[in-house]
Image 1 (cartoon, rainbow, N blue to C red):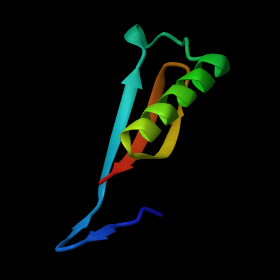
Image 2: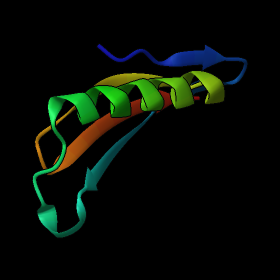
Image 3: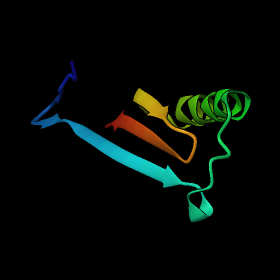
Image 4: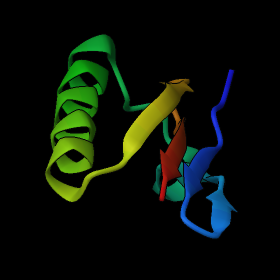
Length: 69
């Protein structure tokens, strides 16, 4: 469950749903590539201070739900 952040004078709740598609919807996101992609995206989230709520996909696309303040 998502959590609202209470700060002085306001409540903050921001989520972004991002979908990436492979060019021409080719089925190239194998399990090895998907694992590497997840590692990279989690590292980017950690470096930039946002939380990855959900990440999944298929052979031709990836869904990413992030939460930030």
